[in-house]
Image 1 (cartoon, rainbow, N blue to C red):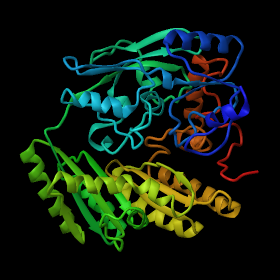
Image 2 (image 1 turned 30 degrees about the vertical axis):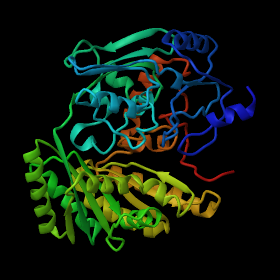
Image 3 (image 1 turned 120 degrees about the vertical axis):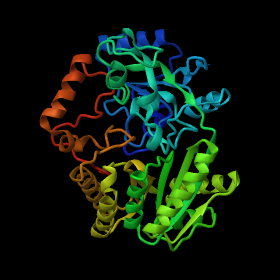
Length: 449
């Protein structure tokens, strides 16, 4: 293949440019198995890829070889309402699963922000989450079984169509989130649930972001479990209002958006209770959406954050360090300190209800001095999350971006145990090499040259 043909397969939504030698678009499990057998026989790296929305470098061919473009494997999307399951091919767009389930009054809960364009195969590889993760969990919580091509080119099936299955090791959960390092997913059985009868939305405005963090803890210990609880800091609010005005208060230090779902009467009652809690803890103002249009407008503002903040500077470093819920106020305070210490344009938004914050740094990768400061700020964000009892990633995965910090969280022995699993499955290390596990001395590098 010509280099220009490979260029579009050399990057994703994170950092780094890595060209593969060849790109193959299989359309069946049999084709995938034959390709993988050949790759194993000749020790050729093989990297599965969906729509490349990954923020961690998951689909990058860092050691060259074959990129396996799975987007053509999109033939199967079967909803089985009596069993509350969906059977899907890896190339199916996640949003299409949502729409197909909705026709039967059902819901596939995981809702990553990229669901309109991301493939379910990529979601499975990275164990994607989304705003609904607070109440409903993440991708792995809704995977009952998989069809997988092993590194040797054999086809295995894990799990079953049943909700309860304790036969042997749980290989399904092992493969979901393994980022393509243990095998290639060629089909999945997903669990569906009945769609809630009603939803309601509330926005709370705060003059202090740390107070908003305390408000989050108050809600989560009140006995009310929102479906979504999202935060936007002042920089996000101002960026959205500049990008696509919707009436957000640009002088507020933070806003919280909450969605309650369930029985209509319960939703109405819980929205009032949440509003009272926010007002008592010190919210400047609380607004309950009275119509679906008002609700949609509020959530649209949250979805506008990512495109809005990149208008400030062109380079966005998206992290998803996650902390225990009780430590959310501490994390907010530390992020403010890190922003000032390294003089970086750091904005905070994300899934505040489960501690899965998204500290994003907006920069210009052409400014090498600025990017050096960004590198140090990102490292300190990870160190802070771990020190507070948290984790490197809540939903974006490890890939290449976070692998240098793996030992910091897992320890030498913990990381070695993961390496042993990888080596036992894939002794030739052909499956998405260069991901998750750091090379000796590897550091986060965001600068060029």
